[in-house]
Image 1 (tube, rainbow, N blue to C red):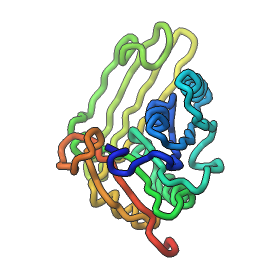
Image 2: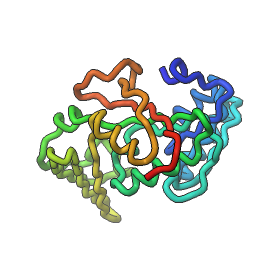
Image 3: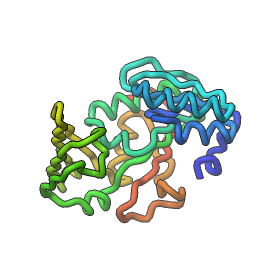
Image 4: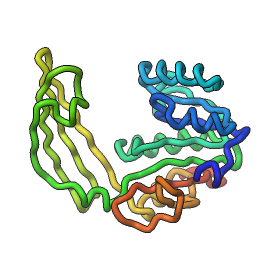
Amino acid sequence: WLDERLPVAGKKLMDLGCGPGLYAQRLAQRGAQVTGIDFSANSLAHARDAAASAGLAIEYRVANYLEDELPTGQDLAIMIYGDYCAMAPAQRARLLHRVRATLAPGGRFIFDVFSPGQMHDLSEGFEGARRLMQGFWAEGDYFGFKRCFLWPEQLVSLERYLIATPDRQFEVLNWMQYFTPQSIAAELTASGFAMEAAVEFVTGASWQGGATPIAIVARPQEGPVS
């Protein structure tokens, strides 16, 4: 639906948090000139191998999109699968200002946010299991423990994980902010963007509510940012 709405052929496209190139490669196959940005060297090694096997000229950069230099003159910037929701408010504002500076005139920023309906499907509580989440957290044997906290009025959740392997233990705090179309539109406006559309993440149809993520199409506003 992205290619139908904003045809990518011949366009410069920046994929923020591109990981192993799942979207970057598909967009390059449709004719986009893609630059993928991610701080995981392992993910980008996989992405480069996959691009080479497919004969695609994708540029991949190991970088932190909140800190490091980004390419300019981009027709499209995308950020897929909830990265925006995992950032603190100041980080989100920084990201939007940085993306705005990378876009060419007429450029668009497309990203997704999690909706209140998705938060409503969560419940506070505790769980623990051997190889919690079917081995997601570590190779080999481990025990995993999860505690979920919810702040419904602020539309914020925290999933706190403690993982114990035979050799070490570590903790992961997975904070998440949830958005309505109105609340994300307000954040965009404060950083010099206008929300062009709020659509279903999977189909691109108009978002109708419920427990589904929202894909946002945003364009820079003219003039200085407050």
